[in-house]
Length: 100
Image (cartoon, rainbow, N blue to C red; front, side, top):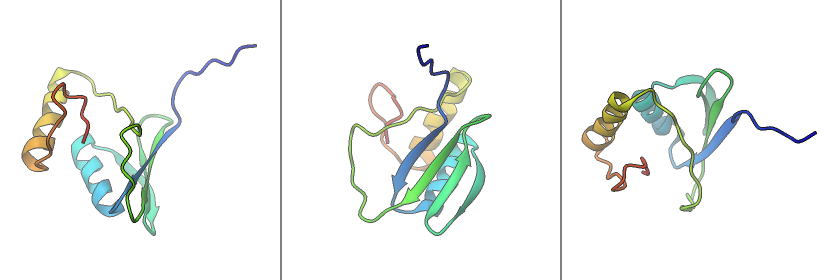
């Protein structure tokens, strides 16, 4: 029998400040915190998915690491864009892949 993937269980990201990252993802995407402490945090992404946030020093940038979050419609994309550019002063990728 062939394996059939039906979803994603979790995403792991590395950051330099876990508390700051949690506040950011809660504010921009409304993620719910599951648990955290000691430089790590887990946020609920969907019904059965989560994002693990780990604090590391030094951060090792890598353009191949990424993850995707789905939002409901173009109105929500506009709100995410507004928060990222106005509140967080982030520069978005020209085609708005939401890389930051």
